[in-house]
Amino acid sequence: MRSNPAASVSAQRLLIAADVGGTHARIALVGADADGRVEILRHEKYACASFPGLADIFETFRRAVGAEAVDSIAVACAGFVVEGEIVNENLPWLVSIPELCRRLRTTRLAVVNDFKALAHALSRSGEEGTVLLAGAAMDDTLPTLAIGPGTGLGSAVCIPDRGRTVVLATEAGHALLTPGNDLEIELLRVFRSAEPYVKTEHPLSGPGLLNLHRALAQLRGAQATFDTPAAITDAAKRGDASALEAVHVFCGWLGSVVGDLVLTYGAFGGVRLAGGVLPQIGTLLAESDFGARFLDKGPMRPALERVPVRLIEHGQLGIAGAAIWYLENESDNG
Image (cartoon, rainbow, N blue to C red; front, side, top):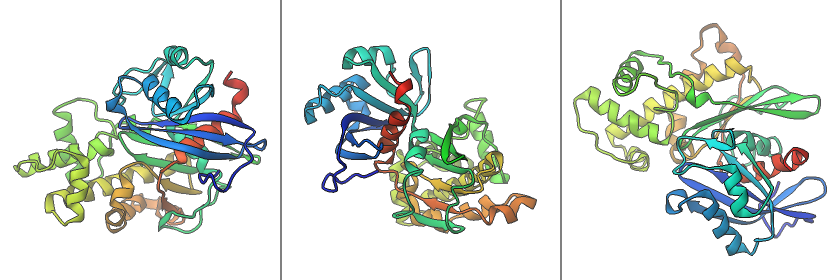
């Protein structure tokens, strides 16, 4: 997997790969060689809200790079596919796969869960550029977990199986939120006053950070100061007390959830933290209760103390992973 056109893979073919989130769509022209190695040749990032639909973003990209004839398209997107439609409440528009194929004039388009794509890319990448938060080296002979808060909370498990990796996409962000201390119980009560089912990503995502800030202000009898997740993270880095409290609660609660998922899936090979939020608060994350809450699992603490946890910069990995997944499953993709 490469992203530098100067270090050229001898491309046998071209495809278009995309990593589509609720806020941004990242799209690339990708070259692949005969061994399935991929290289990102051209990459663009688009604000989803600026376009009437996903097809319009693809058409804009194709025209920009002169790739109208490239008809192999891999789309990594949060959620899952039901009767030809992508189910994802965070997208600004409905995505119909048959309509997308018609607009793009292709039958060679396939959709994969975004964190499943990320996990495929991680299976080929090393630890360069990552930040170690706990433990030591990843052990890819054991199951590993990739998880990250962005517009939602994505998660996937990598399971080694006789020389290959099986990737299990999950919907951990939609699981029931579980509090781990008195403050989180009070926050859950606030959340439940607005909606009876509170999912894990309600506080543990980009929008979730804003939900936390508002709920904490309500508990304190104060006015919520900030109106975007970015404003909260920026203020927290400047030392604002209310923003710092929201970020610290966010990090601690996330640590507890990640520890639960490691135990649930037996992901003792390690954890890779991704998503759009965590790289913005890397120093605050390292200084928070994330690690303590991750380990606070009673008699399982000694086992979790062995589990490495690394923070990664998501970047173009979702795009590369979508391309890798597409090539590995091409016979099923049409």
